[in-house]
Image (tube, rainbow, N blue to C red; front, side, top):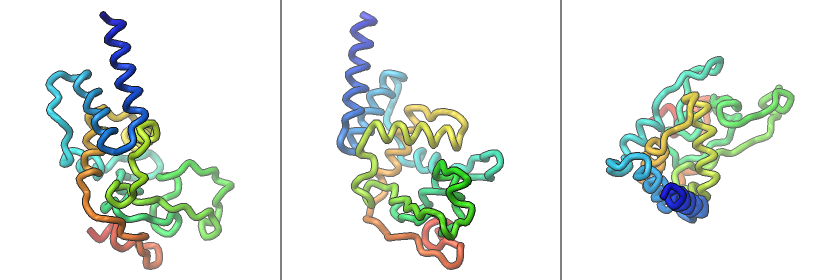
Length: 180
């Protein structure tokens, strides 16, 4: 019996790993959530937004949230090194790579919302790896299945296309971080 259950869970997880759409990935998390908790009643975009915006203290770096890198409005893209988002909040970069941010490699963080970026949340393995890494960074722990599903539900609830690159004046961002 346990072997059959393990096989079923394995097949469900494998199906989640080969999902093509954000909705399929979210359904994979729903299957996992039902296995973990029989009283699972669905994911919440409201809880997901709260997780996305929740501040977390990162020792030596300050207070950050998902929105710190992916912006309060996740339909924007942002060019790293042109805002006050520190490189290490978003990327693992060696010190020798950018001692002078003016000459650092320019990285663009594409819109996080699937409505604004058709490539977001389309590879379950990458989504799970990304959530694991970023939960460890922000919360110093792995996210629960419920938290992962809630964040994805929030991102799926955002309507509208990309809003373009975040505009900056000097190093103060306009339209994505502080102005909403």
